Length: 390
Image (tube, rainbow, N blue to C red; front, side, top):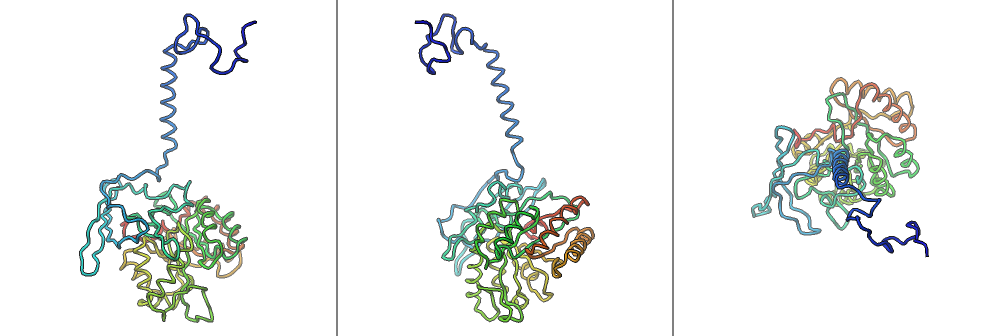
């Protein structure tokens, strides 16, 4: 029978080695040893180059020198005192010390040395919560500061350039109230625009994930009592001045558990509530302990948020203007131009609006033009006053 052709022979069967063959192959297919070494060297160079090219600066793993012991699973972590010291070159030394309980002393604690760029979540998995930042509670997942001191405010923040130029943060609220409106806003708004979700909306978790996949930073709106409440009602779980502090905290936790992966809580209405230090104080204290920032919509000059945020050493941002109080494209674009002027004068500016089709279209068009004029559109976390980053 004639010799079976190589192409018809089953792989690895039927061919015996001939004289002159070695481990690199048979006869006419012999590969010189020098070629093998050259090929291996090329693979090493290509592999190293790929690793360097794919290495994204914001997602480096931190160098941990010492950390506290792992907490008990599903247990609420102790409240901690955290001190952050900046070192030459940008490194941070974070000292985490549990607060002493009643009648006792604090034990444990630790020190972490971290590159600040390692804090932020990899944008490729930005829709997934960091388990170290989640407390499992009866109401659902609650944000918490991790045992090593990391905050949701840092981890879920959208990266930005860090440049000293004029910066504008735009927050569009009311997401999740209208399903079609939410879908349109997420699809049209540039990723640099911050999205604020209404806690009373539908499918908040699903829309949060969609927004994060598109690169947006997320804010959660917390309903608070206005002066004409209940004639004007912010919705369920509204925090009120006359409620007991524990009742307000329980209502707030129900709101916080609606979704995950947000950096900041923003008041929804609340002119009366934010003006009452006794009512607002416990809320700000818990938000700070959980590692969240606070965004004041700037609608009330009587808000006690600035003083309380400074007292609790928590990140605070205050909006400069509402961009769509008048639902007219020309009026909205004029407000956005005013934001730009403010940013050029003082370095940054914050504008808030709602997810109306008119607002979304105007903002999307203005952002593209503002970038060409040298304005950087940044997330709200980039313009917040953060005592831990001073």
